[in-house]
Image (cartoon, rainbow, N blue to C red; front, top):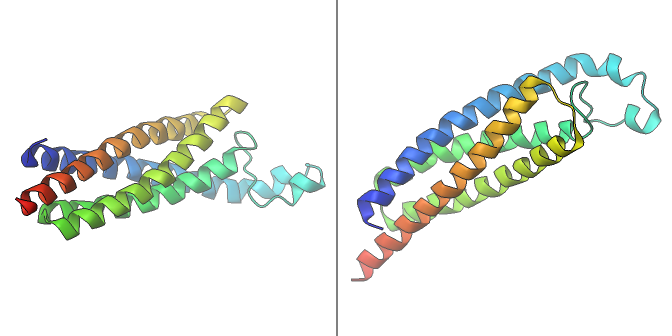
Amino acid sequence: MASGASKTAAVLLLFVNLALYFIIIVISSWSVNHGIKRSREAASVLSIPAHIFPIYFPMGNMATGFFIIFSLLAGIVGSATSLTGLHNIVQWNVPNLHAAAASSVTTLSLTLLAMGLACKEIDLGWMDSNLRTLEVVTIIVSATQLFCTGAIFAGVEDVSARNRA
């Protein structure tokens, strides 16, 4: 891959990821706030193990709490990675590209974890429209983050090969 093509692809994907991670942060934050406001009355009718469970959300199913927490975590880390990745890609030298690649792999692993929990929540059943939107955006951002990580690693290989020659 030519140096300019991988740089252009990485910058474009980082901007797309920044927007998608912002959407994830907004929906996840709303869900956490909604869960905190409504969990006391909703959890009061449950039996004891579920009553003391700290991650209970009155919407969705039993996987919703884990999914929302991990998607919020992935959204925050992904936003920070996208912003710093843009700075590192603009510099386009070996140390900055290695830093962008390392943070991109970390974000990819968190995003894939959130995507797995989204798939589990879909498998378990009922959820409302906000959670469906969060699931769809999480699945889409996991694919774009994978492509972005690939583009950054292609840039690392290209710049390293150019420096050796």
